[in-house]
Image 1 (cartoon, helix red, strand yellow):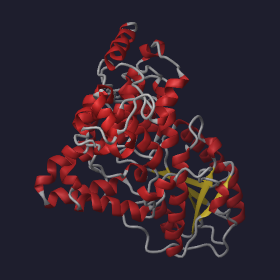
Image 2 (cartoon, helix red, strand yellow):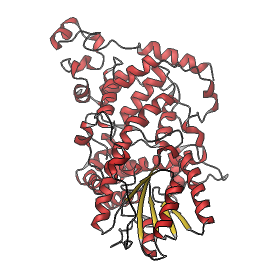
Image 3 (tube, helix red, strand yellow):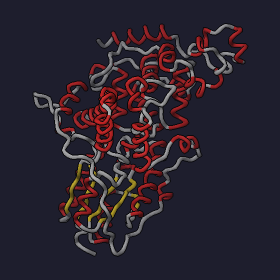
Image 4 (tube, one colour):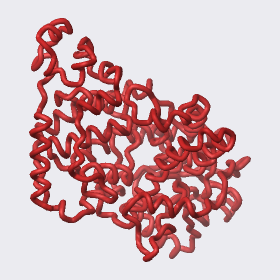
Length: 478
């Protein structure tokens, strides 16, 4: 086998297009694509159940794409360095290329792998395959990291994105003999028992599906409506690209280029497009923060919150997880999450505010649940989002900003379609009381066939009392 063989170590970059590491490997000669399943190397955050489901199907899709180019995806499991060293011995590969990751455990692992392989004379290179900007490329005037989004994004926009998305290689040179690969099923990524039936109804997975989703978002007019519709719960105003970006089925450069092309052709889309691209910016900001403040996956960025009087109440936590809080918009969102592995961003803010402020349960418990149940569970974005809502992170919403779940439901699900879909036991109630069934008259409850406390729970807490208690707790640490 040629000494120009390069092992392309796939991780969260499961695509062929706009893939710097793949392109450089293809230019070098023979390419050996490899994915290594090593959950024990993910530190405190091994992949959750929903993410493993997505990974299974994304790997299946990538395998199909590579085979369409006359190549293969070698699957292995075990210690990454050991597996890569074995493959180097088996194939004579002289280089290992990969796309960079930025999670603390991944950085530590990659440094160990790079150091060990270089000592053995192997060429090792990593590439930016998942961000517009490297975290260290954006600095304040004082030379440090940003902690506030608006100036961060302004600094990003002032920089030139160094290239347009690149097309995939026309073909890949395969080794004369392929090393052994385990079967995808051997990785045991699919859930047991089978609780993922609605995932299949909700998602198409893989790079082609990601590009289709982006094109549909633009062509169906949702990009143009994004400014207003993104906060609605009852209409799909979002692009559903977050899990695809996380697993690298599509790159942010591809998204950027498509959106830019759309508004260049239709200036009326400019404002909505800028709003959408700022969401890509929030993703960049999340990785910036994770890189500079790695402890924020488990600890508050604002140190005074280390002594906040949280309430570790497992019974309350379980009611929230199961969508049994007695607040319909909260329960609808939590059931949506369990069934589909997703919930709209507005819903995420509502349920996170309820957990951390109405129930005063630590934000870490919410982050753990989202990590296990979201298909787009991303350590950087998950940490940023929960700390933002809890009031203890960078650019945080003030702690005293406490979402009223009744008015949130009325405003962002005005006809009650979202609540009625996911909380069908109260679907017969009129809109006026749908978000506060405890205010329904006996006649309205009887007409809807509901007995509160039996068919649907009473509210876990009183909104106004819980709000006062949360503010009192916050005053203890001011």
